[in-house]
Image 1 (cartoon, one colour):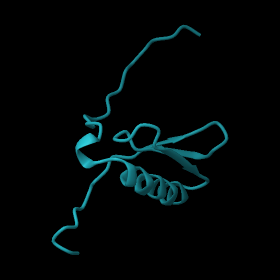
Image 2 (cartoon, rainbow, N blue to C red):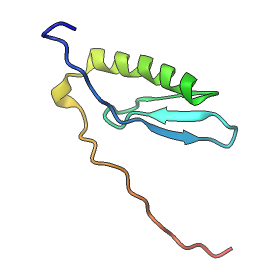
Image 3 (cartoon, rainbow, N blue to C red):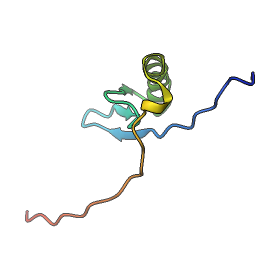
Length: 77
């Protein structure tokens, strides 16, 4: 790696939809989503999308990822 290369560690959110596909997104970029039949395929696909986003976005313009939280809501059946 050259001195001008910067390694980024990006958060990726992974979900599974009702059809069994893995939906992945990177919350640092607006509209950065992809999917795959396996997690591995979805991760390969999101890598391509992230690389495209990086071509159009300066690092200083990235959203700030804070973390994930869980919200509990009681629903009556």
